Image (tube, rainbow, N blue to C red; front, top):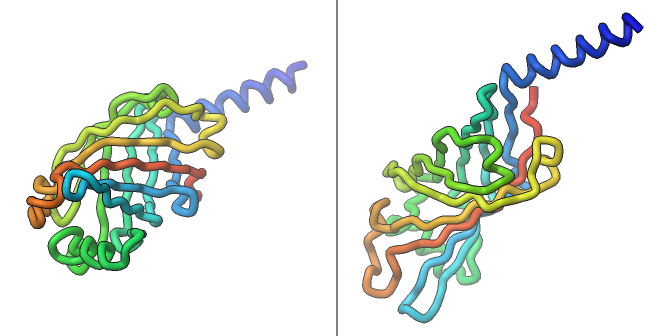
Length: 188
């Protein structure tokens, strides 16, 4: 009986130490993507998606989490090769100078990944960093099922806030964003 109690105490201490140190999750690029939509001439929508997202979610001992995500701008997929070439060029993403889009969240309660809620942070796009606010959609993600579910985020950004001011007469300034993020345990 003493051995069983000692083993249970030891297991409890290990789990407490793990939670106190925090947990790290890696964004699984193979199961994650980010999409965008922008209105063209008030009646048509242009859309695209990024297929390479890397980063992490760090769960602090305090129960808060920080999301750090980088999107490879060159991984954009669009229906039209002409549109893809344009968005990669200097008037839009300017990937020659700025190959990545970076989002770093403010601390958010880890429970928000399940319940949904606000996700604020800093977005760096084309060398410009601006505060942004996104919405975490409610999910069935729990600490036990985190690896088998998707974290979904949506929101809007202004093109002009990040220096994308060309084609203002035909393209909306408001860009709709949607992300679907899968995570896995961070190595080591």
